[in-house]
Image 1 (cartoon, helix red, strand yellow):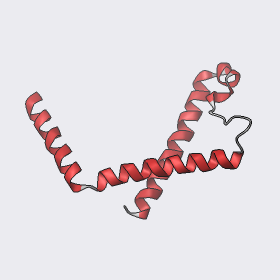
Image 2: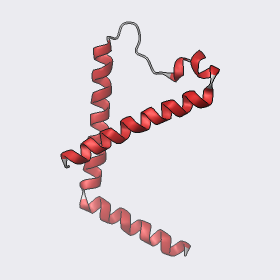
Image 3: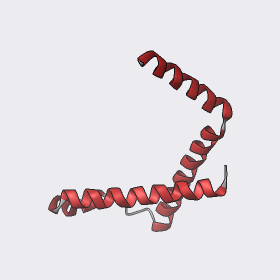
Image 4: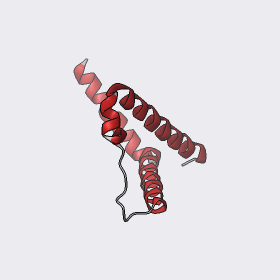
Length: 91
């Protein structure tokens, strides 16, 4: 896994989260405000630092799983082969 791949993935996740929040808030109008923009918020006994650490940890774990799977040549070759076979059957 390259560092620029990880940074690109994180940037894409943050951009997608921002765009999705903006679109949902814009489409929801008044209702979006009533449900607090559908935010997932930690409970009263969870500190902001703990919530942030959990978010970073789970995002990091997801990125590692994605990049490990994508970097395995055997998995990528076998999935490409299945995709080619499916496309030939349809055509």
